[in-house]
Image 1 (cartoon, one colour):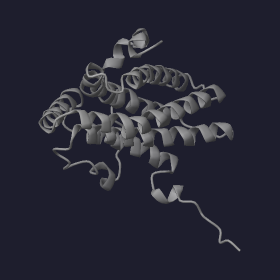
Image 2 (image 1 turned 45 degrees about the horizontal axis):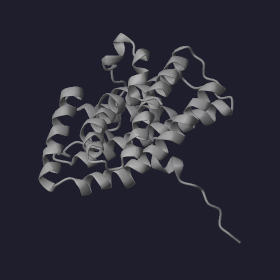
Image 3 (image 1 turned 90 degrees about the horizontal axis):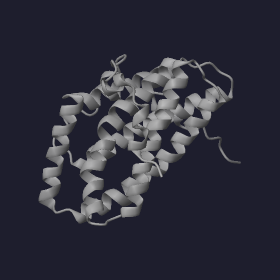
Image 4 (image 1 turned 180 degrees about the horizontal axis):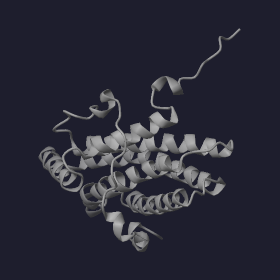
Length: 229
């Protein structure tokens, strides 16, 4: 079976650096996570899941456009994929494996599920590499649409399971003072890897793609229900 380490051969030398941020989100979105000092480690991870959910929505919209034969700017795919690679792989998943999965494995809590979640981290990396390569080559086709479906199916299940099973089991396992120490470690690692405004920068990047696709505003997803007879 495969895990993240099995995919290390795919990592180009430049992939360890962060790409330039693009565009600017509206002020209300750009500052949405500012001032949230002192949040817990689990809250940090769930905030990352929110960012991932927005990326999956983008992939879904682009997949629908591919199916309809509509053109899509490849840069929108690349900017979304880079958020996953740089934030979610570069910090979020590494932090999960170090701070959450490691102690749970040691205590044999959710052990089998954690092994599969780690395999999915590796599969997510491979999917992102394939999506990135196809977008770079301008191959906006049915094969790419299938990768978007694979990505969404896996990560919707992945994040839901972590939020409702793994994270609660971890918090039940840990003592309150250990959770406080964990939050401090998370904060230090996030700043070391991403800088002091890392999450906000990635949030801007996702919002910029949403704006260009016309899906940034909430009303774009509200169904227009007809009155029943």
